[in-house]
Figure (cartoon, rainbow, N blue to C red):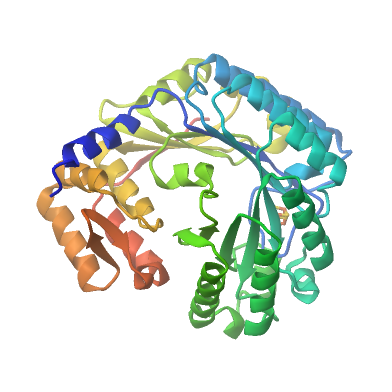
Length: 427
Ligand code: SF4
């Protein structure tokens, strides 16, 4: 064991007791129309719908409320996602300005954007308001594939908007999807090559999943899908890795690649036990016991925590109309999960396996102390035996096989959690 383990563990422990969030997420649940594969909390609407304006105004009020409760004082990243945040036009720039005003320590502020609504004018307004990073939903640079996905932009539009954002000097990320109907190895290669040559600093790559209740589920749910089977998914993810790495990107998470220094700090917070606060329909939060106490001071409907809970996960279950009418978190309902220290630790181990750097010495040492040395060492040995993870300078890092068989690896780590997680609804 490295001599510095005690320091690593102390650093790890410190973040389990942060009194505020480290990352802020705001959810805009509106899109022009629903894509065929999408199961996110989003609804097709017209940007002129009064509900869109009312919802955004309500988010601003909630922001003020959580800031006054001290929940944003340690916040260093913010992310406005959706949905399609760029659908709300200059209202998005106003929201970015509000975030800047109430969370002054934020150094990375990302807005999700879709090519069809990211106009030049909006780009300038966003940068002027304090947005430092754009995550653009491209998915494919093949018009046939885009059409099948139900996307409303063309490949040309996507390339044009990526180039315009890159030219402004802002950090730009591009989301791509593989194992799509009609996609070939060649069309995937072309999409990757074109996207990486535009000058973006970050690319996220996901295999298509057929989610329940989507148009794709209705269309393809009951048939075998040779274009989406695990072998095709693995081959396309490997092609992405090879091509992006040869273009100067480094993989730092199972689905994320960045040029040096361009990693997304906000997303990294989700995988490294940094507490985060989500506002909006379907938005999730992960808070320490201390930060939850501050939230409860403004949202009295939330239950008091049993003595042994050290982490709380919340998901807002209020609908968009209800949210648009509210001026306080106290009016909203949440699904709540309460985790003991041991459950939180197993969760951290599981999430760390998404990252290239894996579980560092501090987390591993903390896990041995909280979950039992024998249990943790047996599980790690099992991961090594199955070729899913291996030890490297005191850290445990996932192997290539571990990522391909992610569910098996994550399941082994989560299996260290004692007992069932307690869950509640705040209604
Ligand atoms: S734009 Fe994004 S959030 Fe909106 S429907 Fe399509 S995939 Fe879903």
